Amino acid sequence: MGEPRHSSTTLALMQELALTEEEIARRKAFLEFHDEDVQRLQELGGLAQQYADEVIEDFYRHLLAFDESRRFFTDPAVLARVKAAQRDYFLRLTRGVYDGAYVEDRLRIGVAHERINLPVALYVGAYGFYLRAVLRRVQEAYQHRPAEVLPLFVSLLKVVFLDMGLAIETYLAQRERTIRLQQEAIRELSTPVLPLRERLLLLPLIGAIDAQRAQQLTAQLLHSIRAYRAKVVVMDITGVPAVDSAVANHFIQTVQAARLMGATVIVSGLSPEVAHTLVRIGVDLGMVHTVGTLQDGIEAAERLLGYTVQKLEPPMLVPHPEEGQ
Image (cartoon, rainbow, N blue to C red; front, side, top):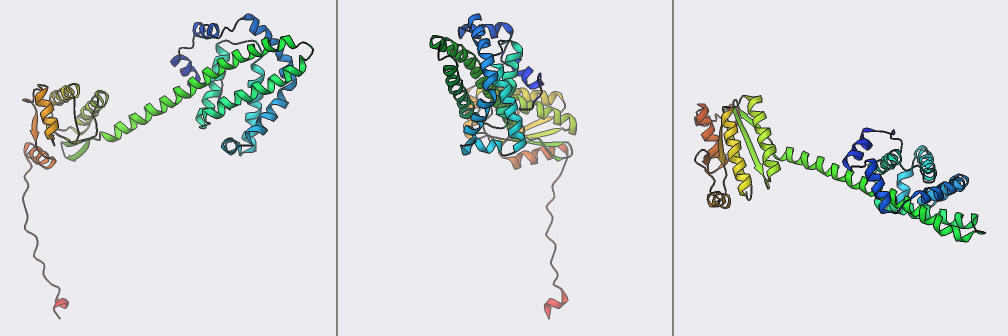
């Protein structure tokens, strides 16, 4: 609730959702939100000012009656702050200005609620409470002019639905952003480039490889080749269940790119299914050094680097003199 106006988050959301003045006007037109609606809402402004504190107190009394919403407002200071923010929100519904600044303010509130993981059901339910509370007071205030109640309430519905659309889009955009960041982090964790020896790297691949992940692993590998001045890379694909033609061709391009940087790539762990797929789709494996297992790949890499492995006889164990007594 305390996020500053014109924050980078809300400005980015405005751009991401393409909320230009033209788009805002289009949304209003779709809701049939016209100048007469603005005039009616401005007429409600005095009534809203009169009953704002009462409505907000009733609203939070309602929220605090339920366990799922009460847990968000256990701190009295937080509760006081959000009450003040909600009062401003409530009054702004009837100020008669519904431009880009209004939309940004609604996005800001949506971001704040999504950030504390307030469920969408509670957020939408709040609108229902507002509408019921306002309708009761409008009926009381216009009891001698009952024919005006419905048009006033319909105008209020239009702006509330405008707000609800913005709120739901904010939730979706923020959740999608969180998911993208998590997916990127998972992909980075799932494609580690490990230095085994001087000038020797291991790239173990596990799980499905799509085009995006294939591009990412290529970038990581080339960066590591330069960082470690590697001459040989063992790319182990034992844990890759299947590849398609696009990914297979990307692997070939990765091998070629590594070669341009002075490194040889040894591919180990081809499963029969992957090998059959590569042959069936006609991938040129003539330039790729392949071996059966990861151990074979490491041994082949060590030979290329000039390492020799010598088996040592285990040392003879001499019993301690006291053990023989």
